[in-house]
Length: 213
Ligand code: NAP
Image (cartoon, rainbow, N blue to C red):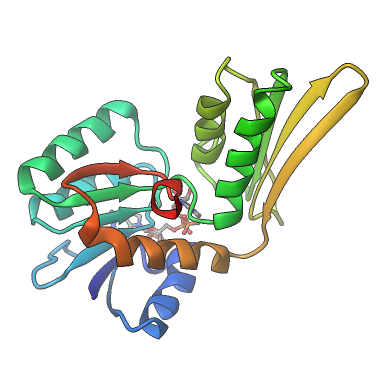
């Protein structure tokens, strides 16, 4: 596919660009200073910043280009707007708070555990440069668990992306933990989303789990 990588110089973009090319995609890198002209492209992959994601995805959809969005921080109203716009243009927009397959399993196992051990708290730990808190993955995990579990956000140098879900019961504690040590962890999920993009209905689809099941 001919793919725009929006945010190609970012920490994820720098890893993803060469990986997309190695998988056979033709990549056009787009940075903050570039005009978002996506003519002739099949898809846009967005790993920018919470304050840029809505506008850059909107502009891509307005040009009729399907989107794979990894950038977190989109609010409910923004997602609804992008869903409507994508339906109108008859293209898919796929948004996933986490493209690491292990993190999807962590959320799946946590939901299973919550059915038996309902008292849960979430600790999400990320690099200090991550702008938004709590993380999209933590918010999605909380939604899956129900009951509004507390979320604790840690921002420190040295971290990449980590999450623990703690389940307390009388005399016992269950911890389900996922660690992302490098940004290569996101590549297979993004490649899968690109591969499946043309099979998705027009409008918004969320979560890597929808492509794995
Ligand atoms: P980063 O290092 O800050 O990189 C963001 C990049 O986006 C920068 O190169 C920035 O350029 C560029 N950018 C900002 N505004 C732009 C615009 N209007 N048009 C084009 N490019 C623009 O961040 P990162 O660590 O790569 O993460 C990117 C996003 O993905 C974050 O929201 C992060 O939370 C999220 N993320 C999601 C997943 C997932 O699995 N879903 C995984 C990792 C990260 P400048 O340097 O010029 O500002």
